[in-house]
Length: 464
Image (cartoon, rainbow, N blue to C red; front, side, top):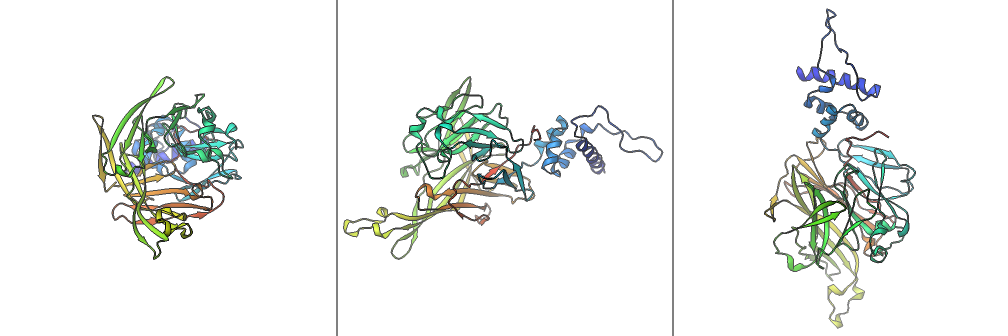
């Protein structure tokens, strides 16, 4: 009965506040009267019990959640106790005037108008409620912003041209592509508060360096020389104030190497950042397990591995996606007289398919990295791939103890004759290892039509 009475009073008060559009009230009025015309006094509206406030917040749509956040600090605190929002950013057409997202929990499409300054740009990733927006078509005039699709705020970042030897080091060009899309393949920020955040970027071609900046900085800080020639950066994420980065090796002799761990200190103006390099993912075994009669089509098991870092229940997980590969070889390049084998033939077509996943919990004790294999993540839904890699708990609309994965792979980067973007997307169930595939691949000549997991942060937003 206490729950029903509080919810009735809270809903009535909330509706009144939303209609008036106010953030606070100087006086409270009694909401109910007894049959004898005596007024019943209730507790202040801004002191709702946390469980009641959270229950109300979960039932509101996005617009009312934003208004709920603006009422008072007490109501805003309930946001921390509610399930994290998770959207799927749909492919963006550069001629469009809005962005579209699919709300994974509500099952609806959300559209947000783009300001004129953002239209025609490219989105090269997202992190903690911010999109990474790039405008311009030439290296000299590329402009980079953090963009919030809800408030439509744009925060400029230093130009890439401030990176030493930028024009000489980053020369990749593809017809119809924005130069930044050829260069940048990963972004992460330390906090949803853009006024205090640190931005980290990694690159497609030179994948053994990182670039860091703060929004107020005039130039990027480059981190290089930390990796050997056989290593490169994979996924990275901020955790407990430190920047963790997975490093991968292309050396097949490292299969049995123990997990390694290094810590480096980076100076960013007056600020210092700890960069923790972890290596827990050995190179793939790349075993041929099937072939057709003339061995022109080969099937490889465990041909490619990619780790993702996910924060879960105050711990850091490494979720490794393992791919199989199908390869179609060109027999015209083979020359049996010269002793050429399959490795000398040109690949006509290549396709990677997600086959399985591994989940490990990592801990650092006395500067030593320890890993624990997990076969169960309880009531959580892990999201990995492009965009935000997060763990969502207690969302009734999502499957539990599973991994939602999303990876767009553009094969034209490797061979111009491939007009294919492979979309490996689906749900991997940890209990039995099965995969349910949800989204198809697509054939297109309009590149960069990627999708991203996007977690909007509505805390302290201002309605646009």
